[in-house]
Image 1 (cartoon, rainbow, N blue to C red):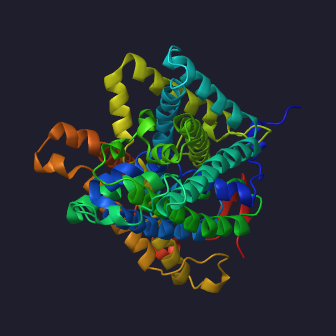
Image 2: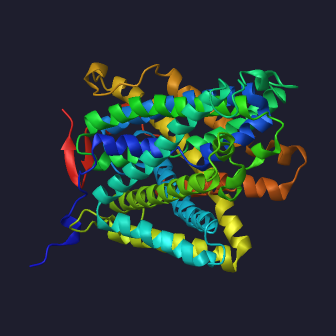
Image 3: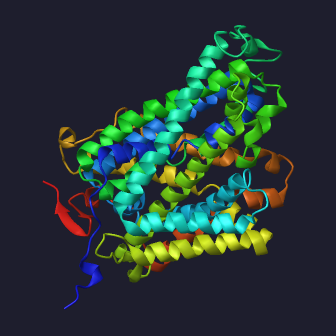
Length: 490
């Protein structure tokens, strides 16, 4: 008799090296390789550095908050499950659908971007062929096994990391005058004209938005905890390694770019993959005589885009599976096949990604609407992490549990989650202040559309099921589903 697919469970095949690279690779992409230049152009070298350091510290607190919960309760539903258990089931429902929607739309954006990147070499091939090829490849990787996803992400992330390290070495040698013409540049571009701070505090706040988008993807480590072989070891290790590496990569890269290219240069205005020719990385490599710099960086950005699509497919599939198992989505999406793959969730996520991509060809207005609707969902997820951790720790203490028993304990509680919550709200509100000052209702709608959509989901569930904020002493800290089975915490 054939085994019912509902009896199968996820495979714990992700190792520490996979989790570290997934979290690290999730935040190194076009935000660093291309858009980092616009941060320097907007706020100057000093303002750009301050903004990235501030957002980096916020992300550190978010990751430690997530790490504490993920080691205690390693589930693929991650912060959707945590908000449901520790705060309010309505909030968990809204968080889950918000995050799934975010990544499902991002997959479509990434495969469209992959086509743009490939047209750098093959300008006469239609975009849609490359996009379908990229979507098919990402589907296949996630269809095979969780290990194939982890391995692919490991190697794609490694390419990006090696690129950043080479860039930093070349950059510092150029600043010192050892490479790139033999003349030491030093720090003169830091004091050029209005530098180091250009535009004051409003410009720095503007760069918070760019920096926030650049760091998104780090929360993937919480989703992967449910398929980690040793979450109690892998998650804390990944978080400790990843934060410092990300911060160093971003801060040092921006420092190098700011030293070599003055903030007034129009070459810093690129913000997407189509601007590869004026990417700060491309310009620095060209300066030292690498004639094929644009091609090399184009190849690196292709790996970054495929990595983002690959992670998006994984994250959205696992979130939909967790919601299916919890009853927040049709039960069929909670089913897992014998290879540990939630196939129904994978198929419907791929179809949504495909449908969204097709709207970019046949209905540009619909496509812009969908992308705008997913714009702030990543920040909303971060707000959910901060709230969940604050409630989790307070419930843990209220129920008389020993904090020393936690396998990983986030530092600086409650400052960490409160500071992360406040900064996330600041970034969300500051997305498009100009639209409010000019009362441009169309821009306000496009920019902030994901906020009313989130609250719509929240209040729909709340009114339907009459949920309330869970009292601290009633928060369920004893059991959790881990790969389809119950675990009772001692």
